[in-house]
Length: 318
Image: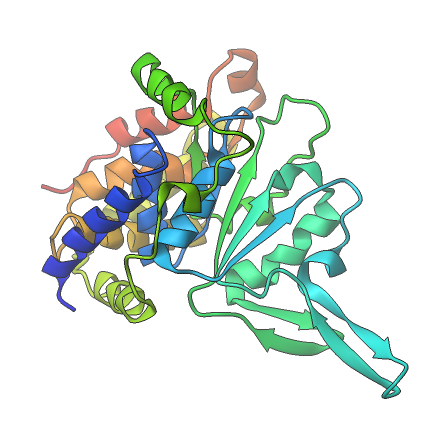
């Protein structure tokens, strides 16, 4: 596969998802970038904005082995990764694998479970493996987490720990649709009984595993010149130096942003990264990795506004 093959591949995936999901084009674009840069996505938005349905359609279109965990306050780590259970017939312990053993894991309403259970995902998201009773088990090389959460101000939720947030490539704000989109949603979905299913809209796999692997390899080979690398680093360091933020982006955030910029360039049909790739992805890649200062909170400032201001202040290469 060549870099010029990535753009039509992305267009094919978008068109298939659009059979069932109305709107959300920017969210889908970011999810594709995350897929081709081996990252994970956190979708945040109010209930009923198709976050779960989008993840289901995304997995079905890509032909990925799909697993879902409904996060609840009483969920335990073993409910996610599995456990060794004693078999009385054989007098041996047998591994019972949890739903994390899949290719695309939907962590639905991830912030409704305590941090102890959320931590069960840390190793899987970073190393694509899980450790059960001292034995490490590999996950798929294509393992991807798409987590959903309601806004943190709502009742019955727990804030995600910083270590958990830092493992997500993007935090994507899923808002309400436009009036025209909502009319189409009601017209199409309002005539159906129960929750929509991807199969109802004839959403089918349109890419093969080998194509995804090849696209990831091609995206990783996209040129990132030293000036662009310096620009990414300068943006990350600027979040640590501004008085508006008590904590800024980590070096891992900078590395993941650079990887995502490569994937965006490939999806645009280019074999080189430009500053606009970095600028376009920086808000989604950084907004969940920063902590507002007390003064900024009192002033009612938002992370997105501060990050946009930093993007304007940090000089981009020409």
